[in-house]
Amino acid sequence: MQFDLSAVETATMVFVGTLVFALVIALFMMTAAFAALVLTGAGRLAWAISATLLLGLVRGLNHLWDRLVHHASTVELPGELAGDFTADFMGQAAPSTGTYPRVVLRDS
Image (cartoon, rainbow, N blue to C red; front, side):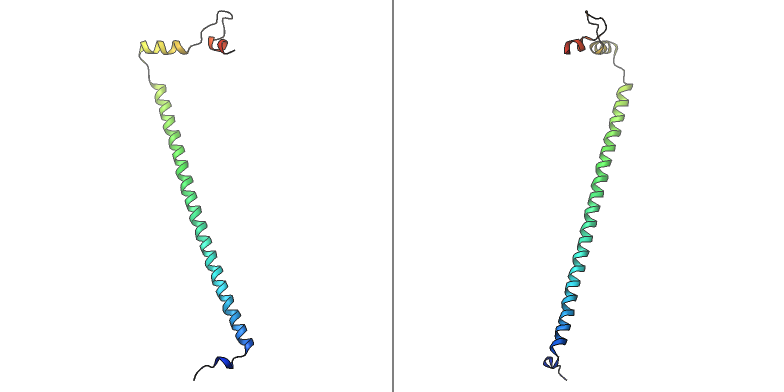
């Protein structure tokens, strides 16, 4: 027995066509929503990884800097070099006041 499409009423064909069209639109929207979720998740994952790496890098640099400063504070300079080093950075009394370092007077 063959199916004769001409025997189907026009209203029935319009109804079935509308349902098929609605199904196609629904599938398209579900696919688009799923793709948006996947892209959002991938973007969030990429952001979390990059933020974690950057935070780890900053913390590592801070840790290394703290170790370097701690190590520098424990190093003792040889006597001859230490005297020259401290003399260069110690404040010297100005002849006019006797209290301010010369650097301050020179800048004023």
